[in-house]
Amino acid sequence: MSAIDFSDPSTIALLADALTAAGVSGLEISRPGGQLRIVVAAGEETRIDVSVTARPDSRGVSPVVVRAPMAGHFCPGHLSGSAVSDSLPRPVSGSEVLGFVRIGPVLLPLNAGRPAVLTKRLAEPDALVGFGDPLFEIEPQS
Amino acid sequence: MIEIVETGPFNTVQDLGRQGYRDIGVSASGAMDPLAVRIGNLLVGNDEGAAAIEVQTFPFGLRFDRRTIFAVTGADGAPALDGVELLSWCAYTAEAGQVLELRHPPSLARAYVSVGGGLDVPAVMGSRSTSLRGGFGGNAGRPLVKGDRIALGDSADIVAVPASGLAVVEPVVALRDVFPDFVDGTLPVRALPGGEHALFPDDGDAFWSQTWKISSRSDRTGYRLSGEPIKPTTSIEMRSHGVVPGVIQVPPGGEPIVQMSDANTAGGYPKIAGVIECDLWRLGQARIGSRIRFVRSTHAEARAVEQAVARYVEDVRNTSAMVKRALRAMA
Image (cartoon, rainbow over the protein chains, first blue to last red):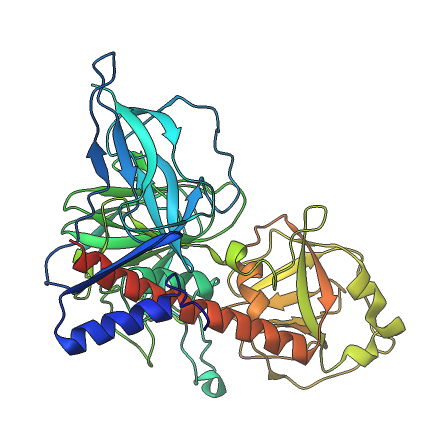
């Protein structure tokens, strides 16, 4: 039996339609290679919470993890090939694009949301990531 | 409503053009890079043919007077919203009072600003494109000037765009397999032999083998090319006949003219070739002074490129809609 490709947008659309038709509010599938979470819309405005604060380190700085807003392929930097520094740590502005989650031709930009120091990249380029997977670690600057 | 706060000359409202009136002498007009307009509109949730602003002279700025979803596509370089740099090919939400600025792009020619709901200017003969020569369509038939205010249509998509934006892999990257890259700084433009190709010696070799430069006498009507003049083996008198964007004519001086979006509806110069329709957007993004070289194509290749572009647009349409639905659901 061939495995279902849960990164295929048409598969996700099919599952979403099936959930809607069945009146089921959501579905979460976890596999070693990735995680898929589908929640039927409640008609509210889009909010993506991609940051989770971790415990403070020995310096009293609380690192923040930037997480995947939805399932897709992780792309650090820009696909057009513009140079992105790999040297970490480095300071980043709140609006600077750290990378993307790519779903087919669509890109969801990832940023720190506040001035910070980018300390770690937590996923490999082009890795299939699931909703909420950690992608970057940053240290917010006051 | 948006207000133009800064603009150079010849920036206009354009959509995908006014098709079907060439027989009565009405040029199609429409965006010089229609692919950028289609993708920009899909990003902001419009029909792909909604009217957008074509910016070909910079800097350009506009102010939003209500919360608006927008995207800047086409040219390279980064637009800025209230001074904060943004991505091109990415939809964002602007708040009332915010100012979008477009600076001179590093290498390409034309940027397009698409807004949720589209620009609500009157449709004339089925299109909202500006016909500069006709003086109708778009924003009162003329280029935009500082202080112009343009109404926007209604948009239902505004809740679907996250604060960090919703972008696409731009065509030049997504379609790199079907659009050949620059060769030594020269843009390859695919073309098919035209009606009078046989009039030119050596199978048109002088036309196909040399590098042409887009001269400063180029505009939305046509690109005049500079290079070694080419001459037909015999001079002929031709009656004027219909021409369309992409047709390459050779006037008596021997330097070709490529008809572009505001193409004349008829002309009498010999036609040596025609640019394939799917390469016209790349030509539309080529700046005055840039070098191009024509590559002999086939109908089969032109069709294959057209199909690849159609698949990309369809993929953007379906996937962006699915991602927006998913983002709403996860809110």
